[in-house]
Amino acid sequence: MINPVEDLKVTSKYGVKRKYTTTTGHSRVDVHNGVDLISRTNNDDLFAMWDGKVIYRGTDATGCNKIVTAHGGVLPFGMVLVCVYAHVSAYKRRPGDAIKEGDVVAIMGATGNVTGKHLHLGMYAIPAHTWKKKDGTYYVYSDTNRDLYEINPNEVLHLYKEKEE
Image (cartoon, rainbow, N blue to C red):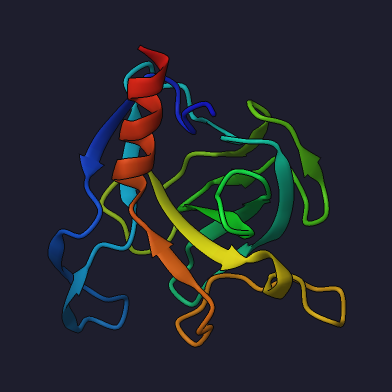
């Protein structure tokens, strides 16, 4: 496992309650479902953290560009790890592309509802038998997917950092 950002700095942790204004001008309080990262070296490349596959790239209703990767064999109990790289300015891979740990998958950006350039990294676990649909497409994280389990990226990055030391 490598970090998704070179010489990363955490700017907002997972689970923090945040108040912000939506693109429609409404005020909203929500719990942060990922971790926000920047690079201390100003390298905007975003790296695949493990070997895997790109399963999605696109733009949501707020204008946020996302690329989503899936990694088998990282989690126990037959779970697939899904990583969401959000607010990217450019894509370097396409859905279906195989990726190796360290490959550049996207470029850090400031798309969507943001105050500045950063990576919002979300992590989810999905049972391996449910992540590929019968029609050949892939489940992407969704509040309606009952088989989706949110993972705290702070803990993943912290655990792997300790193992390297």
